[in-house]
Length: 460
Image 1 (cartoon, helix red, strand yellow):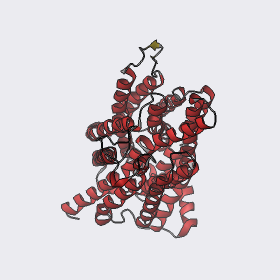
Image 2 (cartoon, one colour):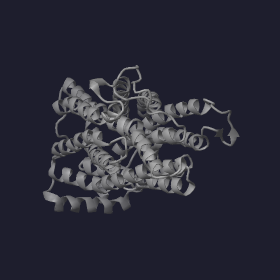
Image 3 (cartoon, one colour):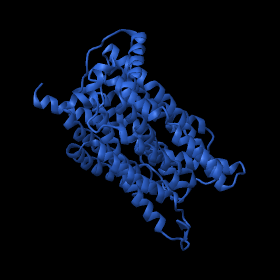
Image 4 (cartoon, one colour):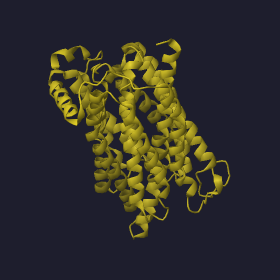
């Protein structure tokens, strides 16, 4: 393979991150998630609930959506990977899940501002989110073929950085041209583009079709430059795939480092997903921000994510992924403590003057750290998984990695939903993510920084 064709292949792989990031940036965290929370809260207030209880109900509803989709993603991930490795075909699966992404994102448009079809909004969002996460498993499994063990950390960080830039650009576009503020105008003071009705919140709802179109356009380089990669198939059908998967799972008992890493990442990645899933709703429900303010917060976080991910990739190349992961987790724990300890009226019990902007400034700073160290954590985690991946079963192994990140993905949303309901506070409800980060950090102690791929021969 020539240098230029390998370079194209790497850039094609990067373009998946650029194409897919808006689902997380626009739909999960900064536009649709907060929009859904505000619509649901207003709907519950209309049924006679107090504002605080309605906010808690809205956050709980969103949390259960993330819980259900997380379970589906987690339980199906290793099976999908095993089938792909058994048949040796991965591209057809990427196409199918890409279609789910596009259909789900487009259907988000139908979530009306009167709260009359909240279930539709959750189902559309969840369908597309499942497609996005399943596609990511197959994309991640291609990382080992792009470079050496020493190079993949840098490649992973650069991919995440490129993806975050895509998130920034897409968020800037929708805030400038589509998303309505309370005045009915966009961030630039314009009417929503394409004649969209601000009263019906069509500019905000348009982020769904916009996300779908963005994905379709920017996946073109991936499909042009990246072909099915990885080892050839070694069996047929679902039965062979499940047999191989079962043997791999049995073999985990011989691999303390991999088993512990899957457990560790299960907790800390769940905590990170909790931060991403509820950061925007926290700003809406606790700090009373507008969706436009949440969008600006998202831009700052995404820019930080791009810069930090790129720097983190360089640090990964020099020091290895494990110490990078440890630093990122500690930084995110500190952020969580700050977020839980403040609201509009106080910070760690210290009263604030009415109308104080200090909580807003602090939360913007938290956005920099969440976006920055969140990107670093994801990129370094993907790199460390490469060091634990069987060269003959890359998709299945990344399916297990997907399982570790999603099998308990119900934990953060469910715990947030439970604590929010019990406390009646959307702020206190975010606190369980601290415990999840700590558990992940403790388990990381038994993970080998260099991986353990050399033990595969003895585990089969």
